[in-house]
Length: 279
Ligand code: C2E
Ligand code: CA
Ligand code: CA
Ligand code: CA
Image (cartoon, rainbow, N blue to C red; front, side, top):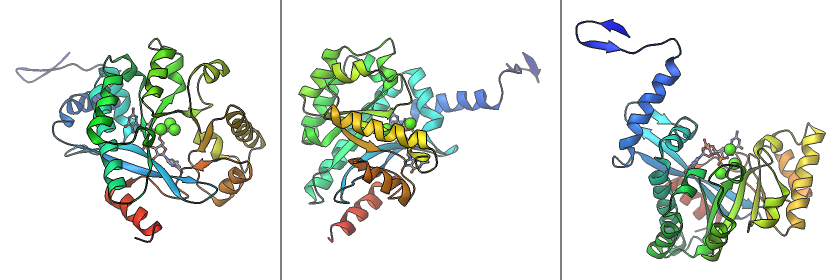
């Protein structure tokens, strides 16, 4: 502890660098962010590769902090997970995304599927299942229009959901997908045991498919694997026409990426939908 004037002690060690100080600031600000309404969702279109139509969107959280500015999820999701704040934040994301999707449906903008990211920490919370049920009931969203994105890390963590929990989630009528597929603990055993609907190919593989023969082979194999298991497959992080051509040629079902659109604020996403539907 270093003395700073009469009554002020600042605990400072060389290890406590800029980054950990920022972490502390973010953690305390995060505690109030929900009540202060500082979160927003952006929506990134998911496009059917056969028809070119927008069939769904991924809801991605952003934090507009009055002093820290725009804080990207990479800077706060990990902290929210460590502190458990991800549980109420995740519940807010689910409710907001479902209500928005229902509103677009009611406005005649189509029956879209909204994908919501679930962190492993949310699986430890007892009210996950009743929470999803309540959101579906309150918003009136057709359960088939909600997709929950899980990551492979879930299957190797100590909160590994019982197969029954995933089956109970499925029995609500929602879709389950594996996010960032191929980057984590990819075990074929969970693919056959768990009621998964969709594989999302991680963008690190998609990135190099046109330059790296190994990545191209991995992507082609994931698509074939998914289809052999009767799963649907979506490629993330598609940025170029060449990547798109390759994916289409391999029979990939859907794509998501900057080539089509960045994640958009709700009103811009809605404009895009209206424009594409000629409304
Ligand atoms: P993710 O689930 O893998 O989401 C995809 C990320 O890739 C998003 O970053 C998106 O903006 C970005 N992306 C999409 N297309 C492209 C592309 O063509 N090129 C490149 N370079 N990037 C692309 P974002 O929005 O910054 O989110 C980062 C991560 O934060 C997400 O990765 C997810 O793990 C987490 N996250 C975001 N929102 C939530 C949430 O509501 N709940 C939880 N638990 N995690 C969230
Ligand atoms: Ca995701
Ligand atoms: Ca992903
Ligand atoms: Ca990711």
